[in-house]
Image (tube, rainbow, N blue to C red; front, side, top):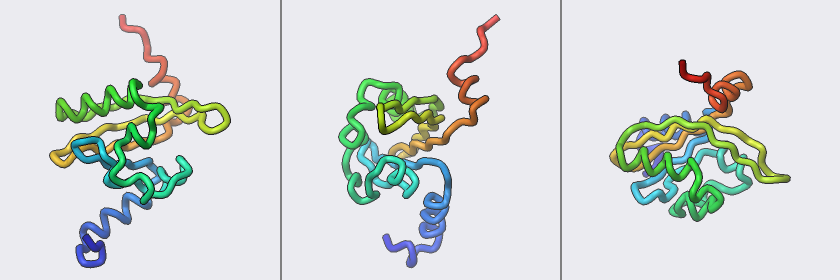
Length: 130
């Protein structure tokens, strides 16, 4: 679709590009249908280079992690799942993201945001239950 011919779609894409969140849209087979520029830049890739790849092909280090478990849960159960994931790769990443995996009939939107330092602490160290 040409965003210029579909004004609502064009506005939605501009909003996804303008956000400071990391945005990855997946089809029902976990193939990447869209990533925003911020996500591509963070990962040192181009938006076009990962289209139609699964997230497991693009980021094989996420296989077997909470990213895979929570993305599959959100898709299978049709419920949003929020979690914190640390991307730690010596010399490349030391990044923590609060991720919202949001299912839709078309697939899944994984939206990632860097939590503030106090929020990160609370998410990683929840208070003990009484």
